[in-house]
Amino acid sequence: MTYTVNKLATLAGISVRTLHYYDEVGLLVPTKLEKNGYRQYGQNEFLRLQQILFFRELDFPLEDIKRIMSSPSFDMKQALLDQRNMIELKKKRLAGLVKTIDKTLIQIDKNKPMDEQDLKETYDTFGEDTVKKYAEEVKQRWGHTEAYKTSMERYSKLTKQDMEDYKKNADIFMKKAAEVSVHGALSPEFQEIIDQHFNALRTWYEPNYEMYRGLAKMYVDDPRFEAYYEKYKPGLAKIFSEAMLHYADKNEPKN
Image (cartoon, rainbow, N blue to C red; front, side, top):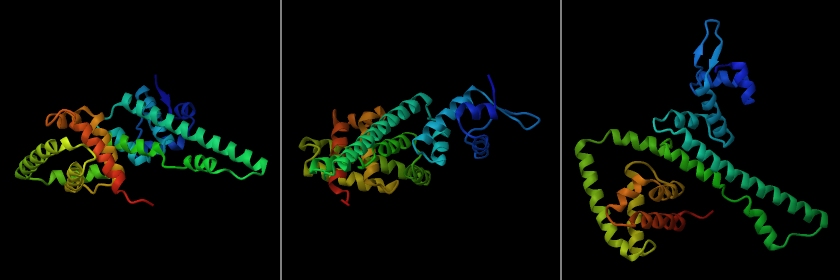
C-alpha cells in the first residue's frame, strides 16, 4: 500500500509542509517521486514516520532523531520499547502535576497555607525529569551523543601501537580493580579505582556525572559490558556500577 503526501499527512495529523521538510533534511524520504513531482510513501515510510513522531513527542531534536534512526544498530522494536517506557514516565510525571494543581486549588479555596509535607510533595513534582535521563540513555545506546562522536574521532587517530598500549594498561587496571573489589564498592580503596576510571574517560571524551550514571547502568544492563567485567571477577560489573553511581552522587556539585 502506498500513500500520497496528503494522505500520509492526514493520517499522521501533521502538515504536508512538515513532510516536505522531513524529505528535504533526509529524515523521511518518499519511496518514489512521480514524474509530476508527487511524493509516494510506502509502509516502511509510514512506520518510520511513526517513530519520528514518537521521538518528537518526547522532545528529541530532529538532528538526534536522524542520527539515531540512521545508525546501523538501530532496532525499531527496541526503539518502540524505549519510547513506551519514556511515555509511561512522562504520563506519570503529568499525573503528578495534575495532582499538584488539584491540591493547590483546594488550599486556595480553603484559604489555608500548605503544611511542610504538602509543600515538599508539591515541589518534588518539579524535580529532575527522569524522562530526560532515560532519553540520554537511549541516545547513548545508539551512540549519538557528542561524547560518542568525540571518542570516535580520537579513536580514528590512534596507531596500532597506541591501541596495544591502551589494551595492556586496561588489563592491568582491571586486574587491580578485581583485587580491590574485596573491600566493597563504597570503600575508599575501590572509590580510588573509580576516580581513576572516571578520569581515564578523558582519553576519549570529557565525562560528566549524568553520563557516568548512564554508563554505570549500561555495565549491568548491556551483556557486552557485563561480560567484559565478569571475565576478571564474577560480580565485578555490579560492583563497578554501584561504585560509579556512588562516586557520581558524592562528587557532583550541589546547586
